[in-house]
Amino acid sequence: MSLFTLTTQVLRDPDAVASSAASAALGRLAPPLLALAVGGAALFGLAAGAGNGPLQATYAAIKMPVLFLLPPLVVLPLVHAFAEACGASVPWSRLSIATLAGLARSGLLAAAAAPVLWLPLSLDTDYHLAVLLFVASFMTVLLPALSTVARAVPRGGTLRPMALVGTALTLGLLIAQTGWVLRPFVARPTVAPTFLRAVEGDVFSALGATTRSATGDYDDAWAPESAGVWRERRSE
Image (cartoon, rainbow, N blue to C red; front, top):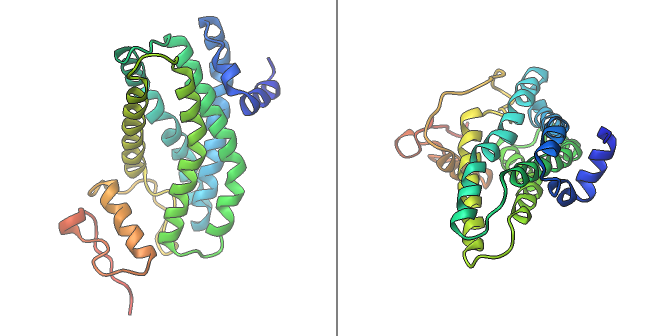
C-alpha cells in the first residue's frame, strides 16, 4: 500500500486500517502510520512556536511529536488491562494498530489545523489567550485518535463504558502533565527561545492562572505559595 493510499484510508476510514489486526499487518503499517503522526505533529508544533521566532518554532516542532505519541503509547497497556478487566477483551495487535491509525489521523488533522493555529498566534495575540488556544486546538485534533481506539474495543461486557472512561481520564492526566514538563510550546514574545523550563508546580494550577489572566485578572496570577510557579505582575 502506497503512502498516499494509506493517508486517504486513514482520513476516510481509520477503522478499516484498525481492522488489519494481524501481526504482519502491524509490522507493515506501523512505520508509515508513525511517519504520518510525527510529521503532522511537527507541523503543528512549528505553528505553535512560530510566534516567537524560528528557533522557538523549531524547539516546538521537536517536542510536539513526543507529546503526541508518548502518552497514548505509554497508556496502551492500561487500555488493554481495563478492557480485559471489564469483559471487553481486545487482541494486542488490533489495539496497537488502532492506536497508530488514530494517531496518524490526528497527525494529518493537526497538519491541516497548523495554519489555523499559526494565524492568530502571528497577530500578536495575548499570551494567555494564545496558550488556551493552543491547548484547545491540541485536544481537538487528538479526539479522533481517542475515538478510533474506543471503537477498537469490542462491544460487550457490562463494564465497557467504565473501561473507556478510566482510560480517557488516565490519558488526559498523562497528556496534561507531559505537556507541562515539555513546555514551552507557545512562548512569551518578550522571552528568549527556550527548549525546556524548570518543572514548577503542576499543569492544573498553571492552567487556572492562565485562564484568570486571559480574562484580565492578573492579581496573584502566578503565586509560588499556592501554584508552585513564578509570580507575575501586570505592568503598570
